[in-house]
Image 1 (tube, rainbow, N blue to C red):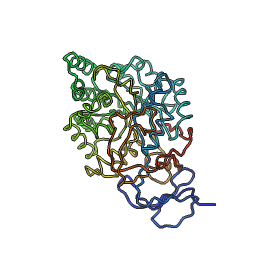
Image 2: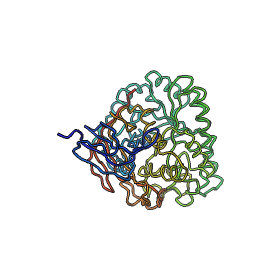
Image 3: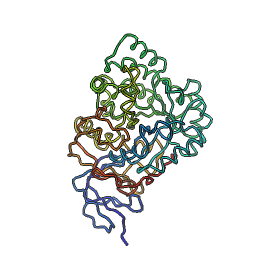
Image 4: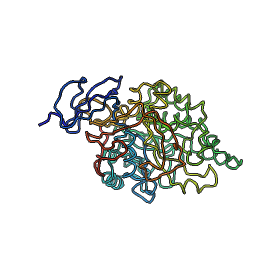
Length: 454
């Protein structure tokens, strides 16, 4: 009988504090040994990955799959988790915005059942945090929800934004069981009215969309949420930060003792607002793409270690939905692109700006596992789940939206034609290859639910 089930041999392994050549032995879905190259072991299967790099399997902290519910024509767990696998993402934390949102035991079970049946990678579930669900937060935490999503900005009738007094009540509740509150941080009245005024002024150029959602609307919302978190002693994550000034505000709150974490997205690091003049509504998101100077300042924060996690905000809309609005102000915000999470960080970060590979591993996996309480995930360490993204660091390729695994395929999306200098060759989840060189190699239902544990 073989000592190990799998040996990854000959690769360069990316650890938290650097990288080195090593072999990784896997047994029963766990990392069982990390060995010097050439060390002889008995393994049932040997995967020779000489010349390739092994990253900890990525954790997408921010995803929208639109099911269960009537909007699953946009994206679902079947297609989205296959997109994840192609991009080296081994655990996806899915947001509660589908209809009905996850706000109690019943709605949690609805989403869990769909996710478990269709996923090829592991998954966690966010809990909804709206005024009517504050009293259900402890229940959702006991079910294993990884965190609780709050909209400070206006969202939609099925997921209303949180007035300040309700946000305070939610933070008080979360502090009692060590829960994590995450906010979409834009001042609701500022962005709603500024957008209306710009529309009334007759502004139609898509690249000016950011003027309706100015950076100070993020800063104000971050400062407000940080103050409440400090008062109640709760943990706080600022979602999809687009404004460099917002990161400044979060760092100041951290210096004051607030338990605050920061998340940004690959698209804010790959494109500035001029991309919207090329792609129109297909590049619209909230918060918006901002001018080039902001993008470079955001990268300075990344390089300084001020960004804790990367989330994709993967949430596609169909082509007809995107095109039906007559102006950029009324168009629906959001798009897919989880396949590009690691390629963008490697291309824009490592290859163009000298960002350390270990820092990419920390932002895309290691720190996410710690912040969200995913104890067996997030690092290449003995005893952790054998989750890996195996990457060819010299393989250049171009993204084509019509070739995605996503349910929504576009040849006009924000990432169309993106040129990456690195490619995910293989993705392994708990010791099983789920994606290899263009093919999904796992069946629906292989993915496991990963509850938060603190």
